[in-house]
Amino acid sequence: MNIENLEDSLGRLERDCDLPSGFCLGLLHDASDWSFVIKLHALLETAVSQLLVHSLARKELADVFASLEMSHTKTGKLAFVKALDLLPKAHLDFIRALSELRNQLAHRVKNVSFNLTEYFSAERKKRSTADARKLADKWGFGFHDGDKRPEPVARNPFQVTDKTSGVLQTRETIFVLIPKIVILTSAIAILDAISIPNRYGHHIWTFLMESEDRAEFIKKAEEIFAKAKVGNPERPFEIKDILEHNNPGLKVKIDDDGQPILEGLAGALYTEYKRRYKEFMEDPHGFILRQG
Image (cartoon, rainbow, N blue to C red; front, side, top):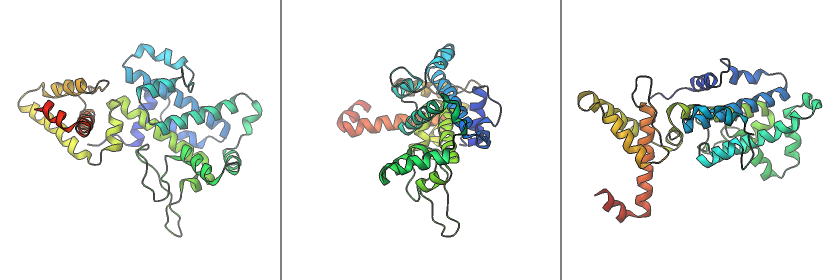
């Protein structure tokens, strides 16, 4: 299975949001840090609205979600995202932090000269060593943190290696040096996490980030389609219905040819596996009896 690469993923999102091709990556070249923050926040606002529309499969709600404030804990877009469990906590924390920064900048014209490097250098000095690391983690999860195992929140985390020693640089070091690149990289990880579920269904993110051996579930999905070609053409739809029935809220999307999307079906099989494994761990005897 070839899940869309990052450029394709962002390109699909740009089309969903009616943005020109290359808009997301083009933000890096914005000369003004003030403009960069304002535009990036607006982009994430639009993308989150699209995520809600796609997850609920209700296009008629697009204007309703677009009119909601972004980060209000009770009534904002992120309140819906959190309640529906559509993005990981690290993504929500990043968006809230960006909303706070955007609000600080948007209401005073003198902030047009805002400088991200100077701002975060000052913020870092106010904090203890531990809190400075947390600040870098909040904004920089799109990068590896030295040789630590990456958290399951960015599909393709970047890494920076010291040219002389060959040692992987810590997230905090990278953030202090190039905060704008770090912030955009983490934002792109969020946009990627929105684009893929929009295409394959929200269960695909867990499959991509947590499955250690995706090939097993891809193979099962391919077998379902292979058997359908020679036996029962309805079998992929039967499996889709079973998986959706067993996992309320899960939706295996249909492609342009009217067939369940292979990647979505593989992700749904993994979701079903996780559900059954959890049941077994909680009540092994009950699970065996139910399955018999």
